[in-house]
Image (tube, rainbow, N blue to C red; front, side, top):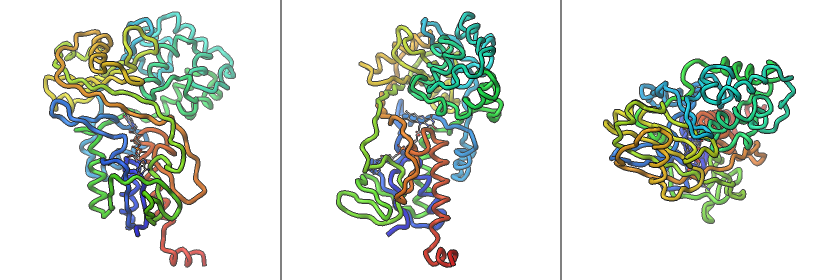
Length: 427
Ligand SMILES: Cc1cc2nc3c(=O)[nH]c(=O)nc-3n(C[C@H](O)[C@H](O)[C@H](O)COP(=O)(O)OP(=O)(O)OC[C@H]3O[C@@H](n4cnc5c(N)ncnc54)[C@H](O)[C@@H]3O)c2cc1C
């Protein structure tokens, strides 16, 4: 009987299992699928293994970089190209994304790059934010309503919606203000305008790139975690779907396994979470017209923009130098879609040409991957002694889930001293 049963072999489960094993505990990790990594999957295109999902991590707090250094991968951390991304607007034209914003909300509404992105009329409307009383929009339930009230529709439609849609796959009208930026509302009250609040958020953020990647692909993190878990004696079982969870163990098809449970998966005893389908289409192209990276690292698309159905395009080989080196003479594009586009590769080729404003050349290889994203629900702390980690409690993104897994494991290591030791401490 292991000390801990970790349910779910995504990054959160692997990180927790590793940390618990480093603390000298025996750990069994149970993964329903045939592969580890959960949402962090990979695919092979033009004979090179590429990330099929996550391609970067947030640098905030140094959480992911610390883990990578622990795993001996510090030298493999790479920064993306600094070229700006672009926005494809509701009128079908494209402009570079303004530099000094938070989720597309401008810190300086009259800056030349903002005027270029949304036009002078919309930029002047956005300036009203500076003179409106701080209470205007302050009670808005969602980000879209807040920005619309303070800066007008143009900022929402041509800046905030494309950015939020590209990053979080939802419209700002469906995004609570606090999920977008936890301090934004308080800073609006404190600083008196939304633009000033945005500038404060930017100033508080550490200098340098907000994201980084791993040379060779983010999936290498999964392989390194798996190897370290195995080295530390974690028993990893794939193809094992847990169907019942309780504090002292789990059940798998009528079999009961005992151990303290760390749940790094959706709770099998609860109704399945609502999910949305996204499709990611990766194209490998022989396209000299893209050598100049006409849209920097990619394009975020405004909802309802004419002639395209993609919601974002990443010029992966312009964003990551290691990828350009791995596929010389090729360009790698990734387009993302809500739902399931008909004839995905052909649609992506068409959209790429429109969004990049250049011929995309010959198709060398392509893959279309369906991804099911859970509609975010945050589980509160459980009363039953099962320890929840990963997306369900921490939110989306590797920095958040790794942090939650490390913290939970540290707490459990503190709590899981032998009963004799605990008794002695109580006495
Ligand atoms: C397309 C896409 C792009 C992304 N891009 C980025 C990015 O660039 N940067 C970033 O930081 N994040 C990104 N993310 C988000 C990031 O990948 C996730 O937040 C993170 O991988 C979640 O890890 P997790 O371990 O909490 O959950 P998951 O990866 O979902 O792992 C849960 C695991 O539990 C298993 N499981 C479920 N039920 C059971 C059961 N009953 N019994 C046993 N096992 C079970 C599942 O099979 C799965 O392996 C992206 C996600 C997607 C889908």
